[in-house]
Image (cartoon, rainbow, N blue to C red; front, side):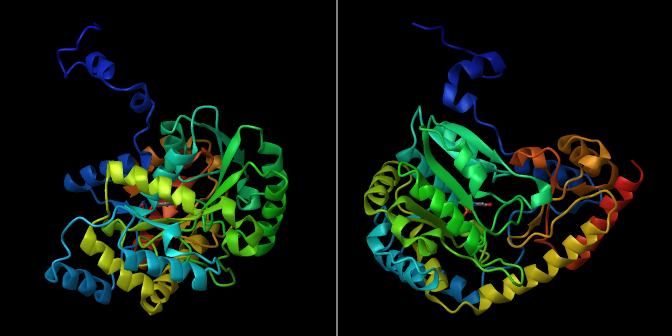
Amino acid sequence: MPATPTSPSSAAASSAWLSARCLALQPSLTLAIAAKAKQLRAAGADICSLSAGEPDFDTPAFIRQAAADALEAGHTRYGPAAGEPALREAIAHKLSHENSVPTRPEQVLVTNGGKQALFNLFQVLLQPGDELLLPSPYWLSYPDMAQLAGASVRLIPSTPASGFRLSAEDLEAAISPASKLLVLNSPGNPTGMVLSRAELEAIAAVLRRHPQLLVVCDEIYEFLLAPGHSHHSLAAVAPDLAERILIVGGCAKGWAMTGWRIGWLAGHGALIQAAAALQSQTTSNVCTFAQYGAMAAVSGPRDCVHAMAAQFNSRRQRLSDGLQAIPQLQLQAPQGAFYAFPDVSAYGLDSMTLCNRLLDEVGLAVVPGVAFGDDRCIRLSCAASEATIDDGLDRLTRFLQQL
Ligand SMILES: Cc1ncc(COP(=O)(O)O)c(C=O)c1O
């Protein structure tokens, strides 16, 4: 028998307990910076945070009311693992009519946020020997989720000067026989890049030449678009490829419902069935009464979504204008989501050092680009009031000037 570690206080002993899978996991760097900022603030420091990855608005009242009504009506028990039938139907209707991707309810799985949709999908699709194709910079959970499924990750790098666009040529060059799944995240976190219809058509042309490759489109920021930009689902642009395209979406960002944990995975029925089976053996159904709130959101009017998106537009513009006014900082204006991801490499510090010094020296919390695969950049969020954005810009300018 292997020796049993006796003292959990010993790092060596506790790492002997952990699976190799979990030893390789990286704790989220975004959470680490947020925790440090919180600690400093609790200790009385004057901290300005542009690090949030969530809307600062309240969930609209009619959605809160629908969940409260569901609680009162006794929707407090286990439900079907794949989601409440009426919510699956509402999401299928949304995808069919709002995104022009014909979808049946049995092609939809309701998940604990977009995050669990991605986790489930990676688990049912990927295994050792498979490769995830990941345009970089990327949202930081994708690589760890792929590794948890035993797959390797092949990055497809892009440049700040190109606005972090994924070119069809770079995609084609990255594809290997092991490539199983491509991630497309538009509007993107952290870059704010939005893929145009023409770019999606060019990507679809590459996919037609590689029939073994599936695609997951993470559309969680679909409603957050700068003026002049539109969201297109790849499956609507290339309906002939729809069988190989999975869509991940959710209520978190568009409806200001991050804490509700409502997301969805939609696509080929066999994959959805497999993901539902996995979910039935892990988390079971998503909180029942929260699903009733989500039904009101998804099938309700979009006025509230558009009103919040309009506010993000003016804040994104303010942040972007302020950043572009800083000498030596490079930024192509973000086109969606609620982030800006400027290149600050001209100041000569790696992104982690820069972010730690920003927090320690001027009390500004932002996220190092290294967390998203690009050490040249930092991520600033505009999910904050205009006064907070102005304050953050002042602190950043002051800090960079004295370097
Ligand atoms: C690109 C991207 N995908 C998915 C998610 C997960 O969202 P959810 O809160 O619905 O799990 C996030 C959250 O930050 C995100 O930025």
